[in-house]
Amino acid sequence: MNVIIDSNTLFSALIKDSTTRRIILDYDGLFLFPSYIFIEMQKHKAELLKKSGMAENDLNKLLQLVLKKAVIVPNEVLLPYKEEAYEIVKAIDPDDVLFFACALAYKNSIIWSDDKRLKRQPKVQVLNTEEFAEYIKN
Picture 1 (cartoon, rainbow, N blue to C red):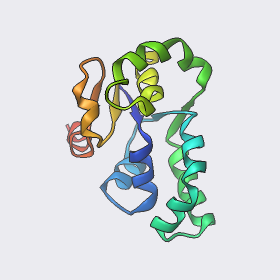
Picture 2 (picture 1 turned 90 degrees about the horizontal axis):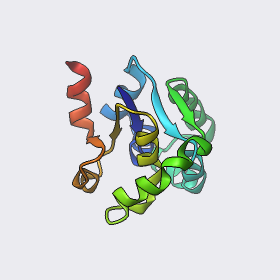
Picture 3 (picture 1 turned 90 degrees about the vertical axis):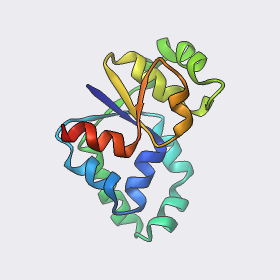
Picture 4 (picture 1 turned 30 degrees about the horizontal axis):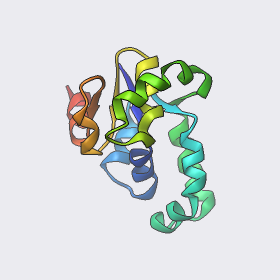
């Protein structure tokens, strides 16, 4: 199974030593991140630093640990799926289109997100943190 982490899940892991962070760091598999996630990180870097209380160097070190567990998916791979993904999420949250395109590009994928609204669509399985923790435990 391919696991795609959305921005908010990643940001949550970077901000606080939490269940989300521990799951990411302890997970035996690899996660998929659309390369777009780095644009989001740059936009919110000051907020991430402030909320985490970490120095920029420490946040970068933590990010490097997370990235060792990730496959970065280039936009070129996602482009053929973007239109279909948009149709799936346009009424829910169009900002998540690339995460859904990633799930469509990599069959047998789930999206790990705590955004309850994303479960309103039937095309891609979305698990929240509690559900994902239970899934990997079994």
